[in-house]
Image (cartoon, rainbow, N blue to C red):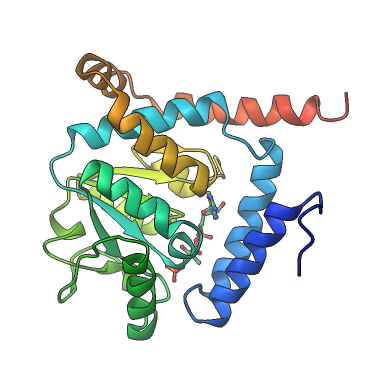
Length: 243
Ligand code: PTJ
């Protein structure tokens, strides 16, 4: 039992949730180390959405508004942490949701799909094909899902697939607390924020944006600039931490 008055209560609850999901086979064991790395970066931004993260979430919403066949790609960590937020994004934007795993097994595919459906999401189903030029199983995707998407939103992505999707001409939006990761640097747009904070920001912005703001945000999108701004926020936060 984690005492609610523990100063690190939320962080401990999230860890417990991921550990439980790992025991149940939803989260890959490797997903726990990925979470640990993200926790460290979240510490550095003060465990709250930064101005740059918020701005990137608005741009993500603008890209979604312009997309014709957007798909949210979900892995084990994303489902464990944010199944409800994924369902809410789908309800607001009408995006497809496809499960795509690095450590892919039929059993994990089934469990993650169930978890998403229990949260209210509609999950794309069908026979996957090796449509992305990659050696590992992230190459597998649905012809009517990621296979024909014009925009893929891939939280907690690994760099290889991000690069491959970009090479295929897709708009790739990622959510990654690490602004230095290969994914962050190769995506069309990186939202440097924690997943469970970023998804609701994107969902809210989707409904708020006026058409001219959508156009302006997409026209002025500069991921390199946003990553530099995110790093500057980290540096400012760290240098003032003990003031
Ligand atoms: O479920 P599977 O089999 O598809 O495997 C998923 C993992 C996460 C194991 C796999 O995609 C992986 O190894 O990812 P990486 O290469 O470690 O990248 C994950 C990135 O997401 C890292 O840069 C982390 O900082 C970031 N990240 C992890 N958790 C969060 C996060 N960013 C935002 N919010 C989080 N909660």
